[in-house]
Image (tube, rainbow, N blue to C red; front, side):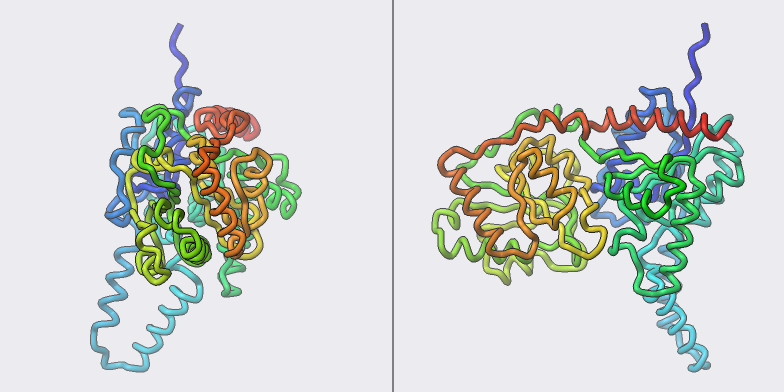
Length: 445
């Protein structure tokens, strides 16, 4: 009997290793485990030269099988930035025309938020190269796109129509149901709303990273609700088995935040105020507490903020590290920190990519988050303490309580046994493979 030939799926993903960070883990782990369930991935992504060099983590490439083809293409990003720089530096004899060009450029980049949507800048190259891949491949059975950036789904729409292939669209975050992705410019909002509608109605299956995202799509697109599924982000058991149980060997109360941080959505400002206040009242806390911020920082100076609040002796900004190191630092902490500012509608649907790894690390969580799915999980499964992100007094009280438990050796790790299956990347990939099979059957391919 001939061995069964695996189905082939074209993964179209903008953020992918060697880029590090939480954004790449979902697609990477799907690709790692899919061959176990009868699917051979083919990857189409951006050339690594378009990523920030300090965010690269080449060790992540070890999760890729040598039999997984990875195609990397150009993007308009660097070329556009160079063109902009040249135009602005070059003299012009036609001042009126030059001024018009600058205004048009500012409107396009700023008003329409083109700078925040790299998917559109990648779209022409991705579509062109995907067509080459699809024409040359012996067989591709399905197309998979994952966002953000949400514009990437338009590539899936074009290719699925052109090649009449089933297409699965994956949303790690909401789109028009989440304020952080909604442009202030009415034309951009109309464009995004139109694109979202096209994706939801034309994709064979929709996958969401949380139930609130799925519920939002189902409520706004009732005709499509039967094809919408939830697959949580999570942890790879292999990443945690590598280290085994870890604890803080030093005689310090160690807190760690592991993940990206940036304004306005993730800021430690109110937390640092609480740390400063408690340290001024409690000498033991000031002597024993050590706080690590691990991960890239966007749009603000974290080291400067720590200095300005006068807590440099307690806090350190570690910066971006390898994923292996990040997991080790999670397991080494006594308490893990979770930040999420309330940025308007859709905040309740966000469960950051690191949450599943926090669960696997089996450490208490101090969550400074708005009401929503993250707060619900932590309360329901007794994973830690939830405080409003702007409540300095509440954060200080929570810090004091956790420190008191640590001093008395009563700080217990949570029982996460009920959650390990839900957040296990291998199990999630098994469910994804079943959804792929349903997509093929429903499309009649």
